[in-house]
Length: 207
Image (tube, rainbow, N blue to C red; front, side):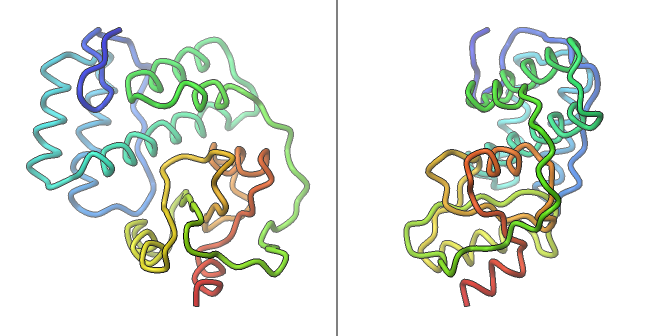
């Protein structure tokens, strides 16, 4: 499949069902996410639909980084839904790979999303060992929080941190309102030994 702008392909691909994000979003992000959901939910992604997404993003003033984050959120919703029962069947595996490819998700993240991680011990992972975020640290925000994600990203940037869309081994912190979250990003953070902080704890450390 040949990629088009934004990672959508021109080859129609069946999607079982659309996913809606429960994260706090700006009105512009909600409008784009709604169109993205409709495009993927109808079962096929056409060249016209891909161009429609690019045009809408431009009209709404969304940057490519905003689009990438929304695509990442959508993919994460699909992964969470598929992992909910702790089992991935063939259809769910195919859906994760298909949606990931359509949204231009890093192939390594797609394959990581196909791994069923053992349930971690019930333990709040807010211990930082006395270490505080410092300039240059990479931070990833995941899940719904009291304020829009852009609020936390702006504060992080003002403190010299680097907000990232996905979790890699170079990421220093992951922030989630639910520190026991089983989201794809939280699972990867635990696997890499990256501290998971609540939004309030993260702001407390910054201050």
